[in-house]
Image 1 (cartoon, rainbow, N blue to C red):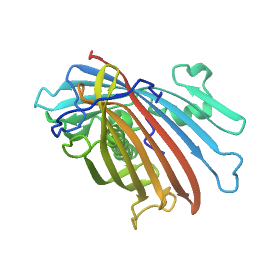
Image 2: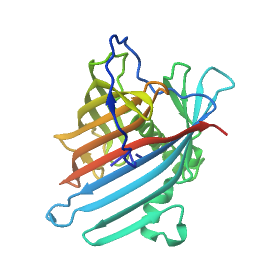
Image 3: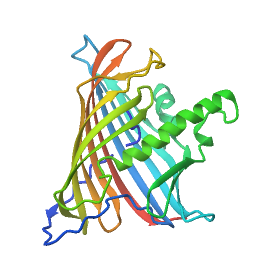
Length: 296
């Protein structure tokens, strides 16, 4: 399940660094104006259908996203232009596997292309203030199928959920307050997932260490949490639900110099409930920043 866009595992030597004194610091993503960030997300899903223990369905998707930052000419805000530029993946069960690569549309599998390629080329803008606090989502027109019509307005509302989910997936595991090495914290919020709707997330995190990665100091954060669907009387019966006992855990490496998450992994063990049937669902999401360069 979502996030949908989240990567190739970065294998780097990690050397713990001890600090004599550590002042509390806010580990919040900083969007530097005139910079462009490239993010790769690898999502690996395994779905076990009831009564079919021998043939689990596997879906792997790698999505490439660019984020170009500029200052808002009318304020001190930062505008982060997000674009989904490419997606490739595979899906199948047993020996029946099909693949898709948006950069090679001539050999794409039509069924998989329809399911996976709809996000390619879509854009939206995330707005942050000069303290790197999120403010709003703008420019969602390309995410809707037919902006201006009734269908388009509905799609626009759904697109806002997708944009916010993408934003939160980049912030996963980060503390909501300034922390020092060894500090722990809790977070409690509601996230909206496509199909599953509003989901309650309870999370515990820890600033576990500072490690040298790729020549820069990184904060290592570990986290774990519980997920469950929020009960709503008006929730359509056909929606997917996340059952009790669903959990998540992961590790985040936050670059203390660039002030951004360069690598994160998150493993979800979910009990999906679809039309009254329980389906165990395993998901691993690996995200990393592959490039930071001058924006165009």
